[in-house]
Image 1: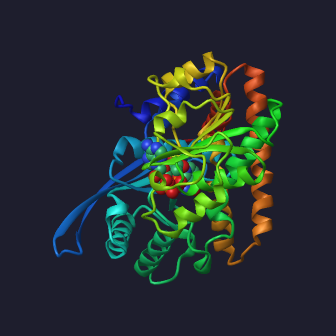
Image 2: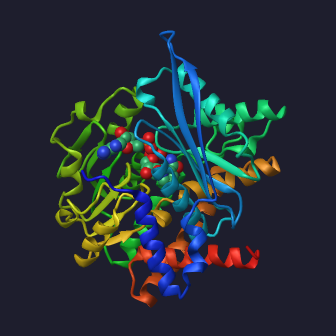
Image 3: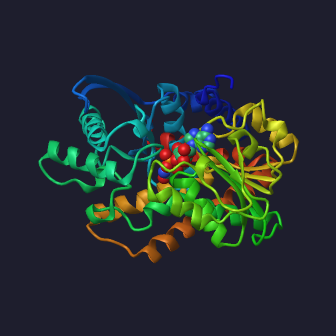
Length: 417
Ligand code: NAD
C-alpha cells in the first residue's frame, strides 16, 4: 500500500470546508498546525533483563474550545504525523458533537501483543511521567485508543496521582469503573456507531433488520459495533482483525465469535471455525458485496487502490481516518454514502466527557442514564450534519467539517486569539 500521510487528508477537508464557509486563509491558518507537540523517550528494563528505550508522543492540536482530549495509541507503527492527524480529528470531533474540549492525541511506539503485563505497566507509567507536564484534568485528558485498555488508563491515573500527591480521577477517561470510570464507556464508541448506522439507514430508507454488514477490526470499537448491530437485527456476514477475516453469506454468530476472542487475547480470528464460514483477507472483506461496511481498525484502509472495488452502499467510519481523500472522491462519484469518523465514532469521547463530568463532581450515573444521554447527543449531531450537507449539496464529511470548523474558528474569534 502506498505511504499515505493522514495529516494531508485533514488539511484537504479543512480547506474545502473553510472555502464553503467563506473563511480566509488567515481564519484557519492556525488550525493547520498543532498548538503543542511533545516527543519523549524513556528506558524500560525488559523481562529478560535487557534495557530498551521506547519513544512516544503527545500532541495538542487545539485548546480553543476547552482542554485537549484524546486517546493514547500503543502500536508499533505509530508516528508523529499519525498522532498529529488523530489530534486534529479530535478537535473537530469534539466540536461537531458540541462537547467542551479541544483535541489531543498520544502514541507510544511498541507492540502490546509482544509485551508482558509487567512491561506494559512499566511503559505506561514511564510514558505518563514523561508527558505529565502537559496533561491534567483542566489541560489535556488522555483515554484509550488502539492497543490501550481500561487497565492502562488506571495505571496512567495512578502515576499522575502519585506525582500530584493526591488522587486525580479526572486526568484520564476510560478507566476501570471501580476507580472512577463511567458505566457504559467501554461500549460507548460502538454504541455511537450503532446509533449512527441506524440513523443513516433510516435516512436512506434501508431497513435495519436483515441488512448485510461487514466489520473490519474486531477490537473494542468493531466488536461492540458488530454486537449491537447484530442485536438490532442486521446480518453481520463478515468480520476481521489483524490475523484475517471470516465470512458467512448467511450471517455470522457474533456472540460466539466474541466469546472465542474474549477467552484469550491470543485467540486468532484466522483460527476460528464455525459451520459455513470462509476465511478471507482484510482486502477481500472491504470489497464484499454488502449494504453496510464498518471499517473499525486503522487509517487509510480505503484508498485509491481499492475504492473503486468497494460495493457497499454505506460506509460508517468507526475507525479514525479509514478513508483517504482520494478514495473519498471515488466513493462519492459511485454514490456511496460515507458517514465520517468525526461524527460516527464520537460516542467514545462523548462518554469520556460524561466520565470527566462525573469525576469532577464525585458522582456516578447509571448505565441507562449514560446511554440515554449519549443518544441525546449522537442523534441531533447526526441530523445537523445530514441537514447541512443537504443544504450545501456536500458529502456528509464536508458537512461535519462545516459545523466543526465554524465552531472552532468562532471560539478562537470570541476569545480574541
Ligand atoms: P483496538 O486495539 O481495540 O482494536 C483494533 C482492532 O483492529 C484489533 O482487533 C486489530 O487486530 C485490528 N486490526 C489492526 N489492523 C488491522 C487490519 N489491517 N485489518 C483488520 N483489522 C486490523 O482499537 P479500538 O479502540 O477498537 O480502535 C479502533 C479504531 O477506532 C481506531 O481507528 C481508533 O482510533 C478508533 N476509535 C477508538 C475509540 C475508542 O473509544 N477506543 C474511539 C473513537 C475512535
